[in-house]
Image (tube, rainbow, N blue to C red; front, side, top):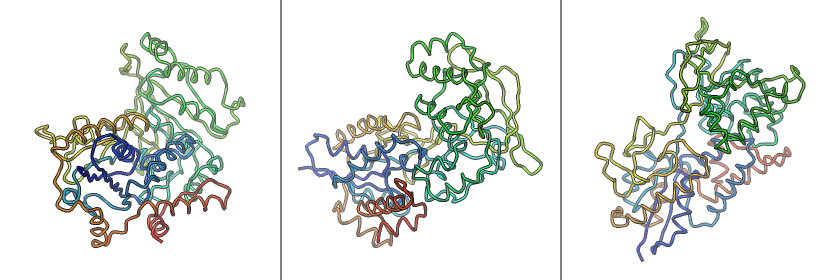
Length: 456
């Protein structure tokens, strides 16, 4: 029987789904899959890219855990592609590789002042409150008024975490340093800016509804944003998701505040639609002092055009949540404009010639960009895996495909990797930490501590 030794770089949902689909496929050959990740723990975006107060994420983690716990996938955590293990190494030991490294950098926003002190990318902040081991341990939350640029789910996550009281997050797995940081936060007002209207937002109804349920936070919307044009009315009438979003926003217009006590909430979330940021003003010390934006209006086709009306709101900090961007990998073609690995349905392409690169594949956000929900990754992985199976004739011919060669190589290089048993030890340790305080889990942040617990 034909043997397939497959490496997958990235142990998040995209990589795990690809491994699961391949192992369950009726392809007529024996499959051995190794997952590599630069983090000591698996799950990628689900563990380090989603706000901790999303309970439905637990269901996704349970599904991913069930796949890994079958025991037919090996994990090598704390192994960096390009340094600890290279593309040449993969070609020597595997028949093919799937890159599932996601998109973890912030997309840029080219406006004056965006690099000022007090200006941050959403991915940086998400990494901090999710306890990413490579994120800073402290976060500056000394601004009382904050701007968030973007109208997607990440913008809502960032805004909700900025406005939410720290004690209300103790039911989640947030680390101690995050709790202490949010507890000392000076934030009272969060302003969310989107250049288009309420019927064109990119967030989903569930995330929007959660925003309105935050304790001791008033939701502020503005009547001028709800003068719908025909395109917006058609979107509401024809799209169920848009209809639900409009229903939620309209309900907020009818009440003075979330808790029906106008002016009594200690914090406020302001939603500014039809507002295109054009500049960040700074004070004499180079710190953000105000956001300048242009009022926009519908263009009749679901987009927006400027009106020339310029407004300004005093803020001391700004977070850009305008999308994530992929990172290049050593020796792998990369599209600098779109932040993805160039590919045809998951088959990696040469950057200049667009010819298929044998043995190299991509799935998830590094394949198609940061669009769609986590669940969409399954169908994405299936497309890639189908090509991998059909490309059997163009796989690499490894010199040393023996499974024991990988641990031997990592040991020789002094790499302290973590495996599935190590993840179980870390998982149990975090749960035990939570039990001591009546919580489901407390996430370990420090990489060295993660390694110590995983490898002891």
